[in-house]
Length: 591
Image (cartoon, rainbow, N blue to C red; front, side):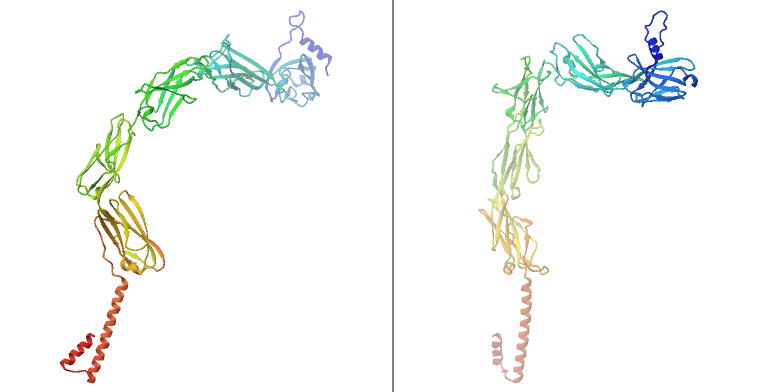
């Protein structure tokens, strides 16, 4: 409730300064607080408690005082209204505490003490709130250097600050200021329902080609009771568009190229956006020119370069805005190559003891070196394009590889494999160890032979045979047989033959009495090579030894019985005792 005394006080406080006969009111005491904090309002300088036993507190808004708190005999009481729940007495009644400060609390507060004498004190409450971290948004469309007016670079926003913070723009660490037709900063603020401010600042500028890498950011300056502070945004870069002044060509990889390499030919320019590119290639031999269109990024990719890709390349860039055309300097692209290696003769053959000459050749745009290697060992036999053989043996047959390489271009090489055939009867591979088997077992017998002409293999026993080519001159035959008494007795014979002769290997079987009988399968493979016909004598069968022992025993028993019978007849006198009788007995015995 507004008293007449307070109206008089307000009238004095609002009197015009300098009016004769009226004193100018003193400056109010300044108290600072942050939003959400507590402000301590003291009713003037420190005095005895008795001076503040009767005090009225007012808030002044738009020059209108409103009673908000009473102190009577040291006891405080809030008046109904916006401050009712936020005021309390402290320091034995000398201080009024205002809690939960908001921006709306920034105003003048009056205290009036009536006893023992009239006294008044004005307090100016200043409220502060640090803004949130500034956010910055760059212009997504970019800026053209041909623009005649400043274009938007970026927008800076600082939210929920109080009072409104000050914004400063920077480019590459240097502050920007208003500059006619060059730099313009436009700022505005919004008052939120909470009383806090949101600041929005737009930077506009005219940019040049040199600003394509410039870094922009904004800075918010604000005050708190503790002093001055500032917050910075992140740095941003705006896309700057400018026409190209130069076009050039690059090739990757750098250095000597060879057939099969992945080669990338790139057209580049110093403009943004880059111009529209085309690539021309001139054949250095025929002088014919060919036009090619690269990808959108200006690159022409040769996934597997060939010698036909060699030539003189040049890029042309067309600026679609200015329609200006620029040409790069021509650049030669050389794809080094080695042709397929040719070996002569293509199918070499010779008899044992003879001679043979192999030669190879290949074309290249660089100097070529040749080597001959043995295929099965990798051993280098000759450095050069010619390989000669004298007094050939069967062992000389097989694969030989001609290796053509270009020393000046690492990794550029070609090879060709040729098989040398030595004319002769078949060579055999012989199993020399005993083959122990069990009866009724299914057995795979292997026989390998080689020679030129390529031999064929046959078996002396019935069974299922399968042939496999080992190399151009070799063959492997696998015979699937059942072990029978007949096979145990005869063994198996492998016969390899060609137009120049025949060779044979005999495989002998021995019954393994330690193994259980029954139908089973096993495989026997040859392990040792022989250069002539090889046979292995049959091993005596265990059954034959047993039969011989039984036969001898029976014969001994028969002779013993016969001797006993003859002795019996002799004693009875029934046998003649002369020479003629002796002869008769000999005839009967021989029978």
